[in-house]
Length: 594
Image: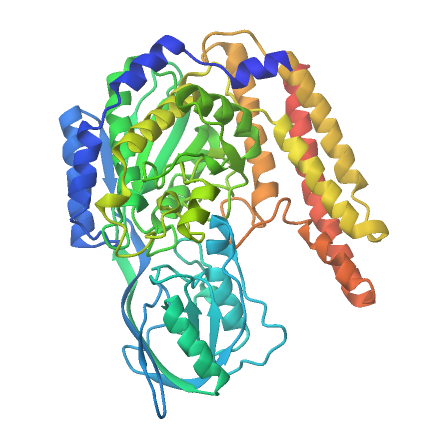
């Protein structure tokens, strides 16, 4: 335990202090102000202007960069309308999400039917929550339900045979979004999941009026207009080569595109990336590993198209050499006094707890990464931490009457016209930039990669216990539990024997760090992906150990012999996948300690 703690808590205090003191607001705050005049739709002229502003600053600082221009599948919403028909009919303000079917502005008419739903209480629910139609027949009708027009909800409404969907947002504003479950540009396997119905969102007061109309059996006329197709988008990547083991690298990234001027989501993040590029370039001779800093387009209008393109294009390099990916979205927003619900994979939790408390005095509350953000690297198996960063406390949110959103530090102006300059906070942005800088520096320079895989095996044990409790006598997770225990024992010996080295170039450090990366490639996919390597899961919730999660359905199938048999076959195959990954991981660890 003592040796493992020393690995996760490693730091170079003198260098870290110099780096943090070099971080300032001068360059990044100007970028935030400049971005407050730019609507950065993916592939647009204003987004290109934003790229040029970043490039100007990179060139002024001498930071090397490369601008890629991939052609990706992008959807830009243009207009939407909803109106009730008949006596007393009304027209309602509406928005259509990216990737909705476009009616080209022509109205479709149908019976409005209400299906109760919930919006979810956490940020992750904004992206992953679905709709339980309870067997209600909505074929050929227009479904009205609560929540954001998230991919999960739209997929459920679409699968039920509805003609269209109307989603009641939780407040006065209508939030922009994207409704496809396809992660990145579609391929032959995923193209069939492209949304096949028009979708709109309305605000809560108008939604209540529509609900009353639905209860009266009203018909509605609905229209959407979108520009959806293939377009060139920018992917800007700065690279600062390491001086010791330059082939190993950390990927720090965030999205450039925005809804409206998008200050909290994500101009503050773009500015953070720029400032860290400037500062780390100054200290490049003292960095062990390389740092890649990427600004993606296609996040908002292509379901992470830019980061997915990069994951696809540089997959083998990422698989061989990427130590960690660090996402930067919505730092430095007003009222953000906590790091609650901070995204982090289990193996990183001791590391991020140490670095955040050291740099901010705040104790973070990490959570499992949702299937969201630009986490386009789970199938490759790359250790990941951060997505959203600081956030307002639950108490402050409750006091303000705020509901859950997916960014902006919890400010409900997220994905609306209200995400303007007032959402950014200079003091908190400086704090978050320094927190990011310290986190990245420690990952770049730690002689031994500072992650603890016994935290992952502990997570696996807890997940298996939960699934076993649900399965009862109908399925035995004993083989998986035994494999977890065997790996855990091997890891304890591995960390206890970790070499006392001062450089990641030391041969013993290279062997240790290879094992750390190999563990990521083996254990992250079975915990975060149902797909084979280098494929992308849908933009829907992925539960822990997803191949085994159907165990939770066994109690409901107790009286159904056929369903139990199907579940048993599925769980057997899923357990085989998990056990094989665990055994390979154990063999890698044991070979390193032999």
